[in-house]
Image 1: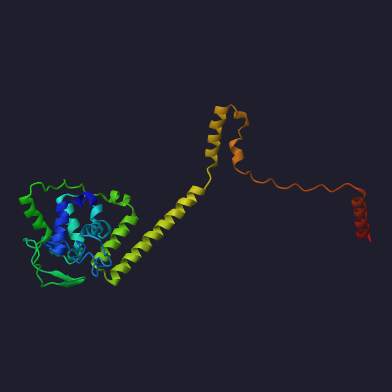
Image 2: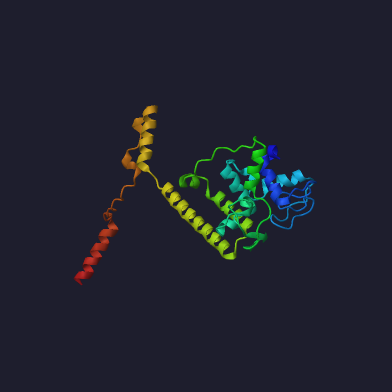
Length: 272
């Protein structure tokens, strides 16, 4: 599974221990500990049935939150963060260490989600946490090593990662943790606000892109004309802008017999 997914074998091992126990016959999925030959009924729901334990494990690591196969940080911090996300960050929201990681160590005392979205502060997790398991495994098998810690991501780098990825990760975390209605509403409002800002920024960019730059065009034409020897045929910069219209001149009265006759008739009427 390490070769197929890129997830270190010892990380898969502690996930298997937490989700399905020893399971010597490999009958339970590492996604949520249910039989892999049936459709799962707890988070992640609706997975399976699969043809083998390997297929179920591949699906859990590649297609289900927190998408362990996509992780690039295999330092001890990156691994423990991934493992906590595998079980959900509901404990962190309560200000508690996750028993999924810290049970059996001096970092954890009590509190456990006894079912999906059901927390009991008095229950003590009897399973060993992933941190203690990895530490004990490393004492037995010295080939277990961690990568160097990754550098901290700056806000500018985080912005370059793309808003779509942030939203998708946030939604996945919400599904995993079972957010309440007001939390989903807050996320929806934030998405709408970001979309509105993006729309107005796009409109501003389009409006400024659409404005002509006539003098710049003239300079480009001049450069082309110099290179082609046709500078004499180049229009003057003033031709680029539309000159104000000249006032229309009044037409001189036509000098014909009809006009003179009309004038004489007018004089006779005035005299009468």
